[in-house]
Structure formats: C-alpha cells, structure tokens
Image 1: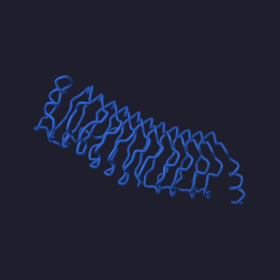
Image 2 (image 1 turned 45 degrees about the horizontal axis):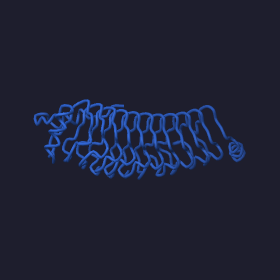
Image 3 (image 1 turned 30 degrees about the horizontal axis):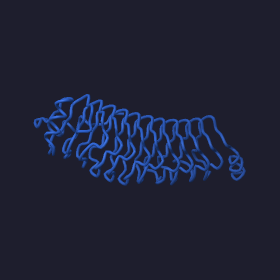
Image 4 (image 1 turned 30 degrees about the vertical axis):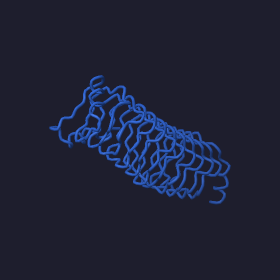
Length: 262
C-alpha cells in the first residue's frame, strides 16, 4: 500500500495549495516541481531530497529537517527558515520574497541573489555571502568568519554587522535604508558605501577614512575609535551630517540602541 502511494506521488508535478508532509514516509519529492502554498512539517517527515522542486509560492520551514541540500529549488515566494537543521548546501536557490532566518552551519549562501524581507543570519561557519545583491528589509548578521560583504549592494532597512570580528571589507555595498552598524569589526574603510539613511555606528572600529560617503541622514558615532585621518574626518563632517564622539555616552547605551528589530 505504501509503495502504491509513493508510486502515485511520483506522478505529481504541481500542487496549487499547501503541502503538509507530517509523518510522510516519502524520501524524495520526486517529480514535483511547484507548490503554490506553504510546505510544512518537514521535521516530522523522512524526506531527504526535494527532487525536481523548483518553486514554492508560500513559506517553507526546514527547521529540524535532515535534508543536506536544497537541490533544484530556485524560488521561495514567502518566508524561509533554516533553524538547527543539517542543511549545508543552498543549491540553485536564487530568491526569497519574504523573510529569511538562518541558524545552522553553512559556508556560503551560494546562488541566492535576492531577499525581499528581513534576514537574520546566525552561523559560526559562514564566510561568503555568495551572489547576494539585495536585501529589501533589515539585515542582521552574526557570523565571525565573514570577512567580505562581496556582491551585496543594497540593504533596504537597517544593517547590523556589529561583532562580526572578521569583517574587513564592505565589498559592493552602496546603500543602507536605515541605521548601519559596524561596531567592533575590522573595517578600515567603506569601499563603495555612499548612502546611509539613518545613523552610522562605527564604534570601537579603527576606520581610516570616510571619503566615499556622500550622505548620512543621521549621526555618525565614532566612540572609542582611533580615526586615522583626522583631516578627512573634519572635511567630511563639515560638508555632511553631525558626528557624535561623546565619551560620556556609554558603550552599553550604544549596544542597546543597535538591537535589530524585525
């Protein structure tokens, strides 16, 4: 009977609604290419492969899943969550229209180019953002091995890279739509960053110059910072926004103000 059910499912190519795989004995989604709604309860299934699946129109939660790769999956129309699962390969995934939450051991985001919502990336092993170019919402990264923001050009909301101690290069990052946090990093200069639509926090980070910046719509915080080029700093501050180097303001206050909000 179970064999017959698996054989019948092998002929399914498209599901318009949700797909709940709770207690499923399937090991692969076989020839299924499209699910219009959510994919749920992968943690209670025996699925090891997404098979031919290319697109999910809704949310997908891999938390607790034993799958190692996303395989052929290219698009997720809703939110994607990867919490304490065994996944180590993002496969062909190119876009997530909703929010992304990652808490797992992975080295790269590989082919992922676009995140339409907020992104929380918490990984001890991540050292490469892959082809990621745009995050429309807030971005919070806690990955000590990440050294370069790579191809990332735009963060539509807040961007928090504080305590990413390995971070040395802001890569192609051009604009941040909200506050930008680079506290306690090893960033020396902003390679391409021109626009910050909120406050810029560069506390306890020995930034060497701010020349590339064209507009900061809030304040710049340089507390506990040995600015290497004071002339550059003065020139920048004269033509741009206000800076705060208030030694009376405790680092704890700054830390509290940097809490990422979804």
